[in-house]
Amino acid sequence: METAPSLTGVQINYYFICKRKLWLFSHGIQMEQESDRVFLGKLMHEESYDRESKEIFLGGQIRLDRISPDGVIHETKMTNKMEKADIWQLKYYLYYLKKNNIWPVTGEIDYPKLRKTEKIQLSQSDCEQLDKIVREIGEVLKKERPPEIQKMSICKKCAYFEYCWG
Image (tube, rainbow, N blue to C red; front, side, top):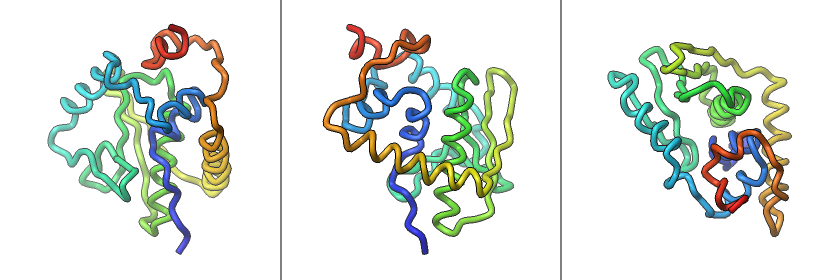
């Protein structure tokens, strides 16, 4: 059996958002507990879909938001502004399950505030891309220092804003 990677979905998400944020988070510098946006996201998650299973932990590093009665993996997000990162986070969960011989599985990203759901499938091409992403994340995390600050439009809403720009 192939070994499943040992990254979290958050690390995959941050890979697509900001490599510096990925490095900081992965090295124990976690600012999310201070973020109002993160708190609102957790509150929305807790109040949505209360009849279904929530927060399923797998292998010590994977935390699925919920699994619907029909076996679909769901990831709940407040907005679709980081849609690419959200999609790849869910694809990583499907990839992880595949690597652990829990297959076939499908997923959906739920945006309750937008009343939108996006169905997600994992292709062989996605698996190859995720193999590459996992290696690239490993390279980022091996570095002694975080990547340089990149000024992006999302910085002002980031939990790490004060750390990077303060």
